[in-house]
Amino acid sequence: MTIALSPTRTALVDHSLRVLMAGQAASGAFVASPTFATYHYAWLRDGSFVAEALDRFGETEAAARFHAWVCRTVLKMRPRVERAVAAASGGDVAAMLPTRFELDGREESGEEDWPNFQLDGYGTWLWSFAQHLRRTRQVARPHELEAVELIARYLDAARDQSCYDCWEEHVEHRHAATVAACAAGLRAAGDLLQQNAFRDTAVSLEQILVRDFSRDGAFVKHDGSTAVDASLLWLALPFGVVAADDPLFLGTVARVERELQVPAGGVRRYLGDTFYGGGEWVILTAWLGWAHHTAGREHAALECLKWVESTATASLDLPEQVDTHPQSPGHVAEWVDRWGPSATPLLWSHAMYLTLVDELGLR
Ligand code: BGC
Image (cartoon, rainbow, N blue to C red; front, top):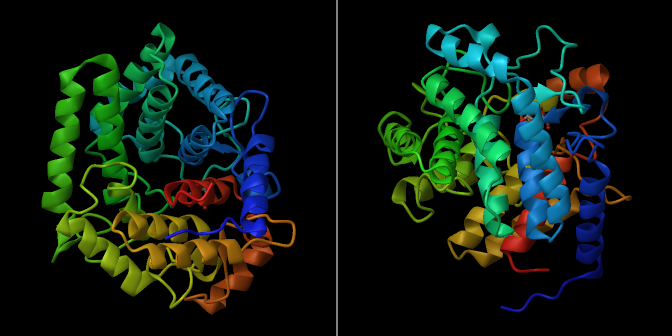
């Protein structure tokens, strides 16, 4: 099938690259959203996917600056990491590493009751850094390997801990997408460091995912749950802890499509979401498009792409989510009153748009 690159698509691709590049601080960190005060921080998760998208579009220098920032930040907090490694088995959440940073690499200190213990960002960074090296045909330098090793030891020690999920919720559970990020990160670290122990942990996490995080032919959101969450798409794409044509993954995609996608529309995070009314997320719709494309469902993939494009504002910014079909309408105003309209532009949304465009071969 030949698909013309429409002027709108070219403009949105160009604008997306500009948003990502402009969102990079002098330090190399990426702000989550430049215009949304609450997101004026750097998340390892968001930044890792942004760097990966930039690499896909040849902006490898910017991606390299991000990875250099992470390495510096990690090495600077070495004593903190060592304390976290030692404390990991004791369940001391306060001792664990933060998920958000100030743009200069300091730990975000403002909000005491804002969940900050999430493991997935560290796994995602290890995965993304290894991808960057592969794409740019480089080998890791000694100080980079030191940072990789520190983070891999942290994940290895903390891997069985429950923690906040990628949405900053449910600290009492272990989450499938988090376990997958840890597995992918440890596999990447094992390969970079040539250390079988990390590879072995990755394999055991992959087995745990199938054993404890699947039910009736699909993966589930967290331990003990029967529900799906759109972040489960990450298990295969990009983390590869399960093959994209594995029946369990295909069953998961089918449930996400059936339960979380608004007909001919976008994808929600999970049923029962009330954040900004629990609307449709740009990143997750791009992710479903990616899954469809991988399964050879080009029409469905393109529909996802077009939906993502339809959410762009007049100035071509992509939001975090839209509230055209909120599952909990009563909660929309509450969040808008508290923080303003949904974060726009969100760098991660632009990054996943670019990723889908690239996957579909539309550049
Ligand atoms: C999401 C996180 C994300 C952060 C910054 C939060 O609302 O739950 O997944 O990393 O925003 O984009």
